[in-house]
Image 1: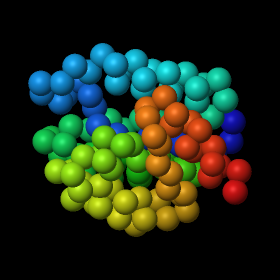
Image 2: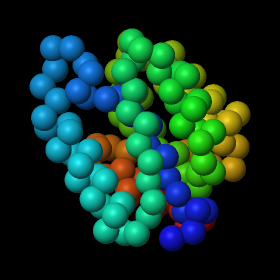
Image 3: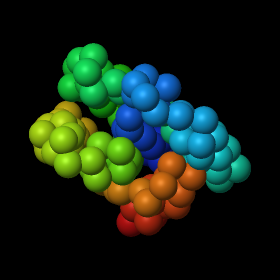
Image 4: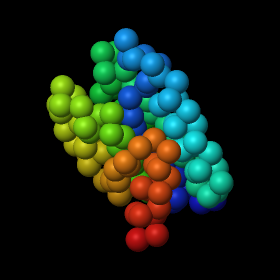
Length: 121
Protein backbone atom coordinates (compact mmCIF):
# COMPACT_ATOMS: atom_id res chain seq x y z
CA UNK A 1 0.00 0.00 0.00
CA UNK A 2 1.28 3.46 -0.78
CA UNK A 3 2.10 5.87 2.07
CA UNK A 4 -0.53 8.28 0.68
CA UNK A 5 -3.20 5.98 2.11
CA UNK A 6 -1.71 5.74 5.62
CA UNK A 7 -4.11 6.61 8.44
CA UNK A 8 -3.45 7.84 11.96
CA UNK A 9 -6.08 7.04 14.57
CA UNK A 10 -6.05 9.26 17.66
CA UNK A 11 -8.05 8.18 20.69
CA UNK A 12 -8.08 7.51 24.38
CA UNK A 13 -6.22 4.51 25.73
CA UNK A 14 -9.02 2.62 27.49
CA UNK A 15 -6.56 0.66 29.61
CA UNK A 16 -5.31 3.87 31.24
CA UNK A 17 -8.69 5.27 32.29
CA UNK A 18 -9.21 4.64 36.01
CA UNK A 19 -12.43 3.02 37.16
CA UNK A 20 -13.36 1.91 33.65
CA UNK A 21 -13.65 -1.64 32.27
CA UNK A 22 -11.47 -1.40 29.16
CA UNK A 23 -12.23 -4.88 27.78
CA UNK A 24 -15.14 -3.96 25.46
CA UNK A 25 -13.32 -0.93 24.04
CA UNK A 26 -10.06 -2.85 23.61
CA UNK A 27 -11.99 -5.54 21.71
CA UNK A 28 -13.61 -2.89 19.48
CA UNK A 29 -10.23 -1.27 18.79
CA UNK A 30 -8.86 -4.69 17.85
CA UNK A 31 -11.77 -5.17 15.43
CA UNK A 32 -10.97 -1.74 13.98
CA UNK A 33 -7.32 -2.69 13.51
CA UNK A 34 -8.36 -5.92 11.82
CA UNK A 35 -10.62 -4.01 9.43
CA UNK A 36 -7.70 -1.79 8.37
CA UNK A 37 -5.60 -4.93 7.76
CA UNK A 38 -8.44 -6.56 5.82
CA UNK A 39 -8.67 -3.46 3.59
CA UNK A 40 -4.88 -3.31 3.16
CA UNK A 41 -4.73 0.20 4.62
CA UNK A 42 -1.73 0.93 6.85
CA UNK A 43 -2.88 2.50 10.10
CA UNK A 44 -1.03 3.77 13.14
CA UNK A 45 -2.77 4.20 16.47
CA UNK A 46 -2.00 6.95 18.96
CA UNK A 47 -3.91 6.03 22.11
CA UNK A 48 -3.37 8.59 24.85
CA UNK A 49 -4.01 9.06 28.54
CA UNK A 50 -5.66 12.46 29.01
CA UNK A 51 -3.71 12.92 32.25
CA UNK A 52 -0.27 12.07 30.85
CA UNK A 53 0.90 14.54 28.21
CA UNK A 54 -1.58 13.71 25.46
CA UNK A 55 -0.82 16.79 23.35
CA UNK A 56 2.89 15.94 23.13
CA UNK A 57 2.09 12.32 22.24
CA UNK A 58 -0.35 13.41 19.54
CA UNK A 59 2.12 15.92 18.09
CA UNK A 60 4.83 13.24 18.00
CA UNK A 61 2.51 10.81 16.21
CA UNK A 62 1.43 13.43 13.67
CA UNK A 63 5.02 14.25 12.75
CA UNK A 64 6.30 10.66 12.65
CA UNK A 65 4.90 9.99 9.15
CA UNK A 66 2.83 11.51 6.40
CA UNK A 67 -0.86 10.70 6.74
CA UNK A 68 -3.64 10.85 4.19
CA UNK A 69 -6.27 10.83 6.91
CA UNK A 70 -6.43 11.32 10.66
CA UNK A 71 -9.38 9.81 12.52
CA UNK A 72 -10.18 11.37 15.89
CA UNK A 73 -12.05 8.98 18.16
CA UNK A 74 -15.23 9.60 20.05
CA UNK A 75 -13.60 9.26 23.46
CA UNK A 76 -11.83 12.56 22.83
CA UNK A 77 -14.66 14.17 20.87
CA UNK A 78 -17.72 13.23 22.88
CA UNK A 79 -16.60 13.57 26.49
CA UNK A 80 -17.34 17.16 27.59
CA UNK A 81 -14.44 17.40 30.07
CA UNK A 82 -12.07 16.69 27.13
CA UNK A 83 -13.35 19.52 24.91
CA UNK A 84 -10.03 21.36 25.28
CA UNK A 85 -8.08 18.23 24.26
CA UNK A 86 -10.40 17.76 21.27
CA UNK A 87 -9.81 21.35 20.13
CA UNK A 88 -6.06 20.99 20.62
CA UNK A 89 -6.10 17.75 18.63
CA UNK A 90 -7.97 19.28 15.69
CA UNK A 91 -5.61 22.26 15.66
CA UNK A 92 -2.55 20.01 15.85
CA UNK A 93 -3.79 18.02 12.84
CA UNK A 94 -4.44 21.27 11.00
CA UNK A 95 -0.95 22.59 11.79
CA UNK A 96 1.21 19.45 11.70
CA UNK A 97 -0.55 17.38 9.03
CA UNK A 98 -2.13 20.01 6.78
CA UNK A 99 -2.50 17.59 3.87
CA UNK A 100 -4.43 15.03 5.88
CA UNK A 101 -8.20 14.76 5.83
CA UNK A 102 -9.85 14.70 9.25
CA UNK A 103 -12.47 12.03 9.91
CA UNK A 104 -14.57 11.00 12.88
CA UNK A 105 -15.74 7.52 13.79
CA UNK A 106 -18.90 6.42 15.56
CA UNK A 107 -17.20 3.56 17.41
CA UNK A 108 -13.71 2.04 17.51
CA UNK A 109 -14.66 -0.78 15.18
CA UNK A 110 -15.89 1.53 12.38
CA UNK A 111 -12.72 3.61 12.28
CA UNK A 112 -11.55 2.19 8.94
CA UNK A 113 -14.90 3.08 7.40
CA UNK A 114 -14.54 6.65 8.67
CA UNK A 115 -11.13 6.88 6.99
CA UNK A 116 -12.45 5.33 3.76
CA UNK A 117 -14.90 8.21 3.39
CA UNK A 118 -11.85 10.46 2.80
CA UNK A 119 -9.12 8.27 1.33
CA UNK A 120 -10.62 8.19 -2.15
CA UNK A 121 -11.27 11.92 -2.45
